[in-house]
Amino acid sequence: MNSLKQIHQDIALTQTMKSVVQTYEELAVLEMQKIRDGVLTTRDFLKRILEVYAEVRFSYKDVIDQLIEKNKGSGKITFSTLNKNGKKVTVLMTSNFGLSGDISQKVFREFIDKVNYGNSDIIIIGRRGKILYDSYGIKKSYSYYDLPEKGEGMSSIKDIISEIVNYADVDVFHGKLLNVVNQEGVVSDITAQLLQQSLETEKRNKYVFEPSLREVLRFFEVQIFASLFKQTVSETNLASLGSRINAMETASKNTEDRMKNLLGLNRSVGKSLENKKQLQRLSGMSLWN
Image 1 (cartoon, helix red, strand yellow):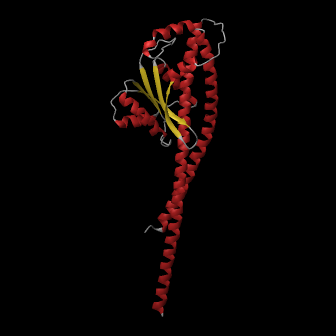
Image 2 (spheres, rainbow, N blue to C red):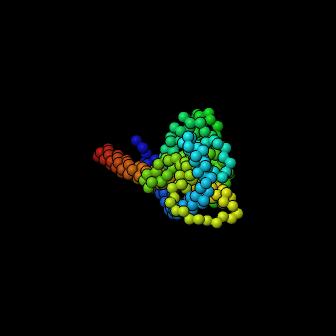
């Protein structure tokens, strides 16, 4: 049977753990609220800027029509003002930290199914993804970056974009927050988003271009690509925070259950010790009598 002293130590430790878990959960909630506002604002911004980009592309209609005719048989239109390398890259994006619930595993499962049967370059962003990939035993080489976060960490995003913008196809596997309770692993085809959304517009405003139409298109293409990628970074951080809140909520419930068990055990052991002392007192009285 556990000693009363050990039970008291376990109660004190459980109380400390509960306090730590609640603190982490509260911090995650505050951070998620900040990021969520930014993600929603950026979604609206990207939608509007893609509409403008589509109108600019429409001004390049003759060139685009020629590309469409040229690529009819291929099933895919490849239009870009950039010199692409013609290759495909698959990007895994996860949290840098372990306290992110199960969202990293969800994203990794989606990613690994694609990598096992595909032939593309691989980029891993986030330490959790690197650990999972290395432990899986795949021999394919990859480039690695820490997941960019607010502050100084965001400076690394330039290096990442500089590498992936040269690819003809970019698939990013990352987490997405559906709500506080649910997060899922999704894949964002950044190049397809850029092309598809830009061709869906029905507006036909005319523009005067300076310095030239091609240079304006190039600027739009690079900046929108970068914005779409930054959005996947924000979505990943948001999903990780949501998953962390779930994990902390589960841990908080577990500590509460543990505390109830310990308090019950404390009462039981205390009562047992008191009964033992009472029996000893009665035994002593019998001897004197």
